[in-house]
Amino acid sequence: MGAAVAAVVDHAAAARKAGLSMPDTQVIIFGNPQAGTPLMQARPEIAIDLPMRLMVRDDGQPGSLITWQDPAYLAERYGLGEDQLAPLNAPAKIASAVDGR
Image 1 (cartoon, rainbow, N blue to C red):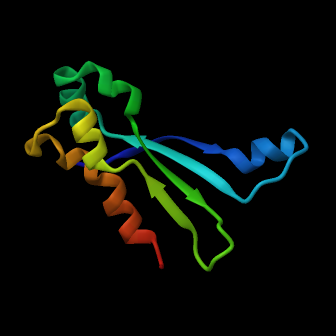
Image 2: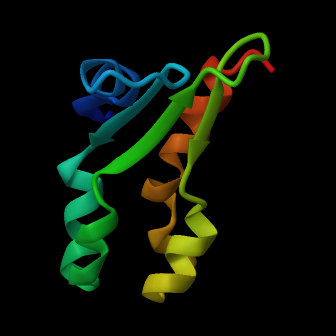
Image 3: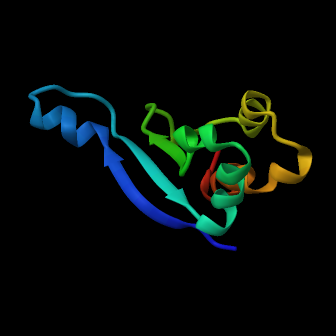
């Protein structure tokens, strides 16, 4: 069950266009309808947090800082059971695969 990238938001590029500067910061929006649809069927309000997102930011250290929403927070917020958490763990798996820290 793979995920597809829906969009990449480049906040640093937007800042430059506005005549401002900030460290390189992108948000990668990705999801899988087979994983997300059952969650939204059970808890429609979770749609505000789906598709999943990863923030990749240059924090001045070697490598990039990768941040995502904690699945435990989402589970608590939406009253999800353990069996429903697996799709929400995708960002952590992706981050651990690419993070060099």
